[in-house]
Image (cartoon, rainbow, N blue to C red; front, side, top):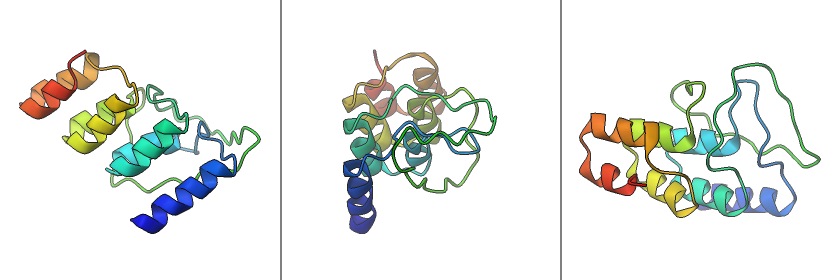
Length: 130
């Protein structure tokens, strides 16, 4: 929603640590992608969040990086270890999030493309071509 976008913009402007990792090993970008929040994904990526980061191995992290922690949206499912936001979006068939990530420079091909091929979704496949 607009209010969430404004809050996220405020946090970014205030120096929030975009690479912070929650106790489950997810970054704000990974969580936004899993929650299908394409606008938040685009905003986080344009602010410098690593679009190719993968979920950590589940160890407990509380990295703040000198800035405020960005509140994570609550995805409807657990995020798999080792997958990028692009792979997670491709697995769920979320074309808007895939496009937002690709526009931000996320690498195509690989496991994300394989997930789109498995779904037989031609628009996803086209968006994920390297």
